[in-house]
Image (tube, rainbow, N blue to C red):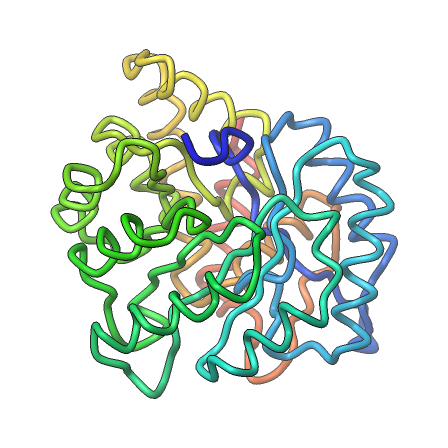
Length: 294
């Protein structure tokens, strides 16, 4: 494996906000400690779930410094740096002190919808700009365009510091083709909580999870069981959490997970515009599911 520290359960951490819309450092501290207690394997900072696109430079730095301080080297950290302007992504990478981080998670360019050669050249440029390990992030539902399995495999073969792909296409056949054709040491990480079990069964090495933020102990245990090949025990946890996961994404992420965390007294449910909190139906169902979760 190109980076064994990225095997298992990574958690895409939220950025808690208070009623005044400011970053809630106390709640962020509480969540990092919650993940430590839940024995997850690493933490992803400033990803999609962290609302990174609506945070100022100063707020991003506050989130980074808080997580680094509270984490205190207990878990590997991954930092989200991505965008649809290749030169700006490279500038951001060069401006950032990456020494506390195990890797960069870099989302495929969105909105301008590159062709496959454009995706390849984008990741080539990023790869050459840093010696830090990079995780390619394919999430067509958000970016509006898909990095095909052929392009992902081509990138994996040509750039050794692109160590993994976070595959959130939801297309199991595509994901299996990446796994089948990739270099042996290249890692495939699930980007969909409800597909983690089948992806690991097919040869994936873990997940970057949203639901594990609420239930880190149970979800990371499921992933460990999958990695050991004990899918009988793992599927019991998978099906136990599945309905909650569905609700978390039904009316927008991170609105769903923040509301679930508010039910667990970890942070408030506030999100920043243009996002809004989940609708009443989703909230009521999450209340029921979280209350009855045992």
